[in-house]
Length: 432
Ligand code: RAT
Ligand code: ZN
Image (cartoon, rainbow, N blue to C red; front, side, top):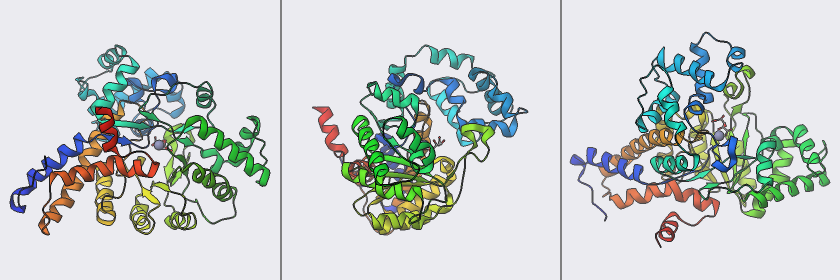
């Protein structure tokens, strides 16, 4: 039933409550995570020790603990989790976004976060099975589908695909290929080792081999899109192995399977290698590169997330010019209340509802619970602000319109880009 919302003088709290409940009740298609189904065994991470060992928290620990990275990496994962817990949650107040996330997960499962150690939490997670935990977490987070990051260059992961490991029906593959575009010396030797003869010089036979490599992996994984993360120096057009491989291998393969290409731009890898996964940073990238690609390859579609706050406004403007460009998510260092709010306001103002507001980037299953709770709150606030202004200008807003907008942003913008049926029709199918 569609409810006409009250006139402006009364609307503010009612409006906020209505928006929040629709945003929380609408299942989200989580378009970029690092999660794996239980069948992927050691790659499928969940539970308290994984949660506390999140690389975002590891980086924060070194700011406050009297420990060197060498000492930290030298102890077991359980001891590492204890160090992080003592440092960030016992000796200091866990106000950072990543810390608050752990607090939210614990309290969501009825566990007290105000504790001196992880004993109770470990007992709680040890009593759960992976399959049962996956459906519980997806329900709590109201996530309908999870999109993975499947690195075709990772030997452990590719072996699992070669063995036809079954994949949970709600987990979708993404063909991720960072070395192909960022480290050709490594990529061409891996390709050759795997029987796809490729040389250091990117000549026609090498291009054909690289295309065949991607073709075979697309057929094996059935990905929803192909993806790469790129440094701030990413350029196009330019005379480089990356530009050649992008335009003569990757984009043609995307076109032949109608797959979007996701570019996550702005990461400066390993500025502090001693921190391992926690050692990456960011930089301002050139948004005009994205515009030139969208212009020169109109038959390709691009999902784009940029890491620097300074790129966000430019990316919105680029998307106004090219409808084959879909901005998505508030990635990594942007995933904080102050910045998500700013970006979401800006996107609503410049793009209406034609963008994908967020992805979780979850590495540990349980993170879905807090990442989507926090993101939904921020998105609901931005939306309520936008609607309040609209009502002030004379629009008669209904709850059906809010529902339609949220469904578009949480499901259909991605579904349409990825060539999937609209959300409504999948719901009808499931109800039958
Ligand atoms: O956010 C993260 O966890 C990063 O370490 C990266 O994995 C990033 O999201 C990526 O997909 O490259
Ligand atoms: Zn990621």
